[in-house]
Image 1 (cartoon, rainbow, N blue to C red):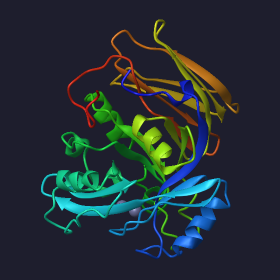
Image 2 (image 1 turned 135 degrees about the horizontal axis):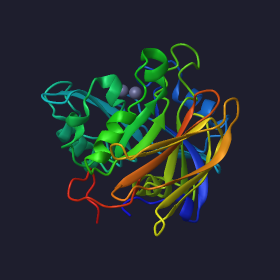
Image 3 (image 1 turned 180 degrees about the horizontal axis):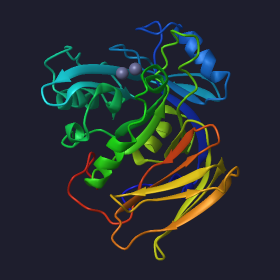
Image 4 (image 1 turned 90 degrees about the vertical axis):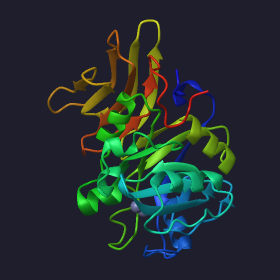
Length: 309
Ligand SMILES: [Zn+2]
Ligand SMILES: [Zn+2]
């Protein structure tokens, strides 16, 4: 299996918000106000990702930390407008001139500064799945960006995700706020990750993110996800949901719906004979989602956003 399953590893669950702006760039709250907002709502970690401004990793409390972060953007001759989020950088990346730096070069610069790199809101940016197919060195993409959804109706990039997975790429999925606070808190508290890590330190959180020990949510909780590799059965337990999707490559996908007016808290699915991967997602009565990372059932080299070792 190329992907780690957070539900089969020891550790602790920590809730985090990984794409946020402040007055350091175009957000309306100061960095301290941003940290207070999340800390007071039960989050365990955040990354401030202001445009071209690298934030610092800090540990303001025993039960709350900040990761270093930044968002950079540019225009690629082929991929068009791109935004990238870098997390856990040790130094400021070489600035990307707004135009003229390829997406791959911008990824390389973030990586050279020690960061984990994520493609921000590809649907909002207008990128096509094929634009991302040849990019190397990214951990994954924002499959849900709350700000892009509530402001523009372009927050869901799950089709990009499934296209890249179907092409055999290793792509993890984040849900984020991308909060700018320009209309109060309208674009905050919309998307987050639950990370299973050994401890609440930047190093442990980054390690868990890199390995895929997390799931993304805009509301529901996933309590368990298990794959019986021999039987090829995948099963999920979740908070009350109106439906569960098991999404695989191409037509190898299945939706299980609760009875009309009801909810379900568990579901299972038997993988098809030639199915290569599957990811689970559940939707609650408010239309909010939780997304597991994909589990690879049948590895298909060699294309990989990050080369599997
Ligand atoms: Zn952006
Ligand atoms: Zn942003």
